[in-house]
Image (tube, rainbow, N blue to C red):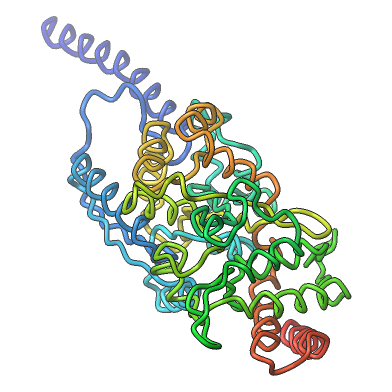
Length: 432
């Protein structure tokens, strides 16, 4: 009997000693934000097999090479994770996302652009990443201006990975050939128009080398020119504000400049920009396209110049690409781990070295500029004077009509005033 009582007492003592430890561990896990592992666990749970789908907008080769490389390295470190990667041109991107969401087969991770933030945020289609970001020990290192671009009504629905300042570039060798000073690029519309005329190479009436490559449906070119003349597409309340005289003047200038261009589609331009094959003397290029050009033609690095044309003000296109997690995804934590590792300091620097993505960490700024003082300083300057999509629900619809007005003017279908009037009216009807 004494042995039985003693054994019961020992078991009771052991049981009460274990309970606090269990309660402590459960409390620690409950306090962790979503996606953060509980500390102090003695045995890791068996890794669950996870398949993530990643749909990225944009089809630039160097971007694809980087993401394919990162995915390969990530899967090697996380053998339990399989990542299915796909791309869509920006013209097809929204349709692909919408079809996937409607079919109940959403991509887990989306490579989004600035123009989609308001639309997706308003529809609650992307996860608020703030609970995950709050768990990062160095969350204050990310540039506030870049983070703000992916914020919609207080929810951080997109993490910036690729600031997209689009540089106005010129070929210094072509400038020399045309008798222009390669160290004195155009600063005004008048100077740009004059330089374009002198740089253009023709055979009869056919332009063989563009003085300035102007694709009338390319927002990277058209929108900055309009903003350079003082056009603000949205007012301070986010309402449309582009039915103005300055818009007509900008369309007139676009028409003048287009006579010194060659015919090329935006799709062709995105795949092999004419500036890179020498058939355009002035154009616009993204940092990754510049990096690709230099990697293929290292001897041409010093031949690339950057300029900042202006009328009322300087302006360049400066958008951003982001990583988001769809609300309907069943793998939020796994998707965040993929994103979180992609924005570490080391991986961000790898992304710069492999694809010339500008950095969004403040601690990397000096290192970034020191790596290429001329080009990277120009990129930072372009980020400061640039602007991309308006963060409004109507922007993507508005952009369609803005570019249509530009196209109609360039191809002599309408005068600038007629093109603006008709497209603005169609735009208002479309958003009612």
